[in-house]
Amino acid sequence: MALRTLTALGLGLGAVLGFALPAAAQASRPHPQITISNQRTIPLSSFEIATSGEQPRLVAKLAKPLAPGKSIALKLNKPQGCAYTVQAKFDDDATSDADMDLCKDRVIRLTE
Image (cartoon, rainbow, N blue to C red; front, side, top):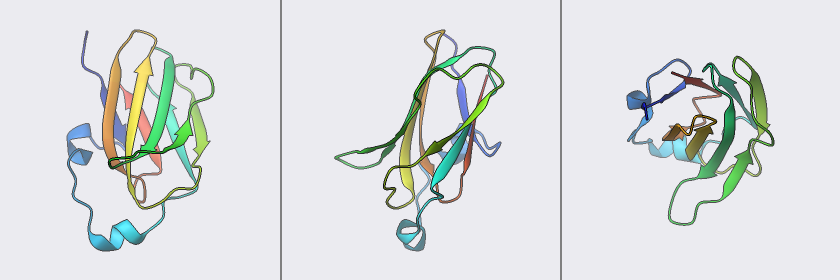
């Protein structure tokens, strides 16, 4: 299975993984909705955004598969802080997950 890359605002996954958030960013709130863009040639079958930490809470979930080349806005349910875990799964069984700062990243682009 080929490794797929999850990008945020055009940045590579390595640019967002392991990113330490400053204390001021932790007190911020993310935008109330995040745009997901499937730039792969394979449908996105599931996508979830959860709070990070020991007891993660789901704040957004894709309701139905997202076709290649399409985008959708997901409303965040009671977002807190900036640090979130994002998990994506495609119809070809490729998966991707990342820790993201959703106070900075309002668009998540899923690419090959």
